[in-house]
Amino acid sequence: MTMRELSAAAGVSVTQLSLIERGLAPHTAYETLALIGAEVGLDISIRAFPNGLPVRDAAQLELLRRLRMALPASVRIRFEVALGIPGDVRAWDAVIEGAGWSRPIEAETRIRDVQALQRRVRIKSRDADLSGVILLVADTRHNRGVLRMHADAFAEQFPARPRELLATLRAGGAPPRGGVLIL
Image (cartoon, rainbow, N blue to C red; front, side, top):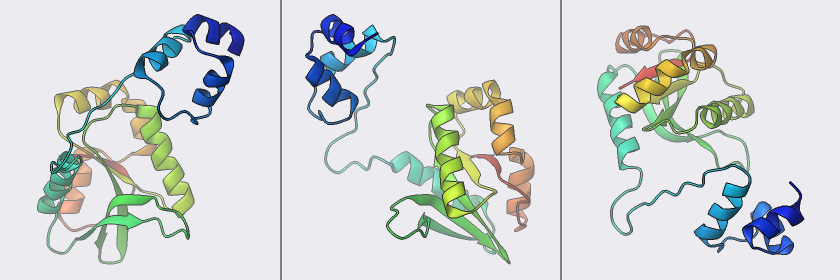
């Protein structure tokens, strides 16, 4: 489909469509985005967060608290640890450290996009020159279903099994490789 065909079908100008495509039209109406998405076979979703005092990442903070409670005192945990690349604002959600070892933690309260999650972790691992990332996942029916459905994809990147990983960590030992941890 050409830009002209899409703009005619969605009822926007080619110029406006080009701005939207390049992320240069931040105040585009949701309805317009939905029309464009429908024309190219995409569903547009929206997420809402409370205004004011409620903390948007309260669920993630609770998940990280559960991790802290599952670890022995000999394993230290640091939160929001920068990748250490000058000018790069990305960070690991946490890093756990024992005697002579450390592992970055990426925490997910609800797995929404398997490929995006894997890509984000791979890129951060590559850029930080690290391996053995632990994917901390909230123990929900949805997340367990996603992990079961995409077990092969997760096993390649996060090979340690959840139970063996948790047992190793609870003993204060160094996880031999990255894995999925469900709490």
